[in-house]
Amino acid sequence: MMKQIKRFKLKDGTTFDTIQQECKFIRDGGSWINPDSLHYISRDVTPQNSRGAEISLEIGFPKDLSKWDDYDFVLVLDEDFCQPYTPFYGNEPFPFLSGVISMYNEVMERFSFLEEIETEELEDGHVCDETA
Image (spheres, rainbow, N blue to C red):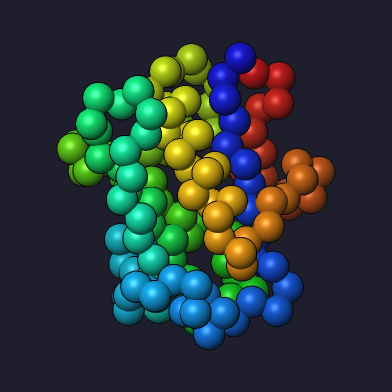
C-alpha cells in the first residue's frame, strides 16, 4: 500500500502575524510556488532512506489567506534535479516518494497554524486514492 499524504488547511483565525511568529524566516514573494503568493516559508530536509537527496518544502501564502490550500500553495522540490514532486496524488509504489511523503507529513504536522483535513472535508477535487 502506497503511503498517502495528509491534507492540511489553515486553522481558523490564522493571520500573517501568526505565521510570522512561528516561522521566523518567512520570505517575501513566492513566484516559484504560486504567482499569487506574497510570502513563503521554506524547509530543506533529507527524507529517510534517500541517500542524502535534498528536498525542499516551499509553502506560499496569498494576500487573502482564505484562498490558501495545500495543493496550489505548497511545492515539494527535488533540489538535485530541480523538479517538483507532483505524484503525491497517485498510487504507484515508489519507495523514495514514500520517504518524501513521510517527510512532508512530519513537517506539515509541526506547524501550529495548520490542521489536518479529513478526506470527506475536501472540496478541491484533489483527493488521494484511499484504495491504494
